[in-house]
Length: 68
Image 1 (cartoon, rainbow, N blue to C red):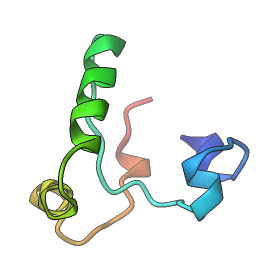
Image 2 (cartoon, rainbow, N blue to C red):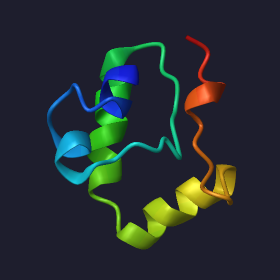
Image 3 (tube, rainbow, N blue to C red):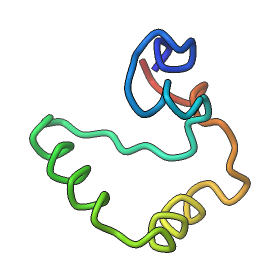
């Protein structure tokens, strides 16, 4: 996460200047995370917005809440 916030990691977050973590899910198994990511990518934008706002209606940066 820190590398993304600092722009050190390439990809989507660097290309579009994404710095705010507004939603995250913890997984025990990376395969479950990958499966969920692929499923969510197929969702309509509205569904993704509703998912975020269900846990973070103020769109606050959740980076500091991570248990790392």
